[in-house]
Length: 190
Image (cartoon, rainbow, N blue to C red; front, side, top):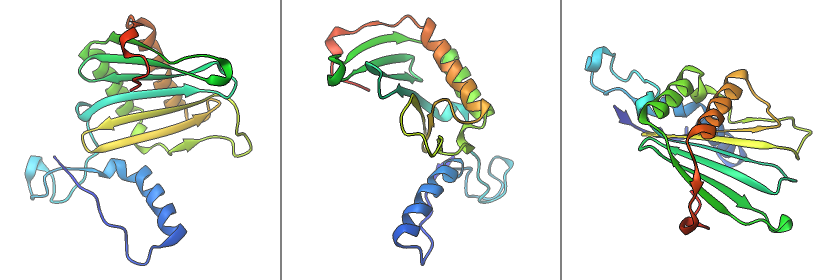
């Protein structure tokens, strides 16, 4: 498997370039990983593209926050089994950052990665929110894989059922992985 990036097309500049680049990122994550460019490799045609596999996923990060919340959360799950939950403090609420550590099994991580693949995470839009709403709870799910990353933002639970199902599965894993305080890691977020 080989990763590549294609150049921007000629004649794209200014706002068009910025818009094209953003849209390209949403769609291109699926195109970032390529089977061997040689004809016949792995039984595929020359240049045929494949999305990243669940095994290519190395990190799953779910960040949640809201304007009035006393703290936000960033849950970071890694293929190596490490889990970090950072509670981000807010000065206006007089809360401080704190970090919890835990572990999850490789099979649990693989199940999450497989669910991301089967739920079509890599073809979701980059953002789901009501254009008239700028406050409220939000989440950002980022999945890092061998060839890049994909991030999906959601405000007030907006988005397809597949995204909500993936959030719920990640939250279920968080609830049972046995996170405990890591005082020596304060202020060293993920």
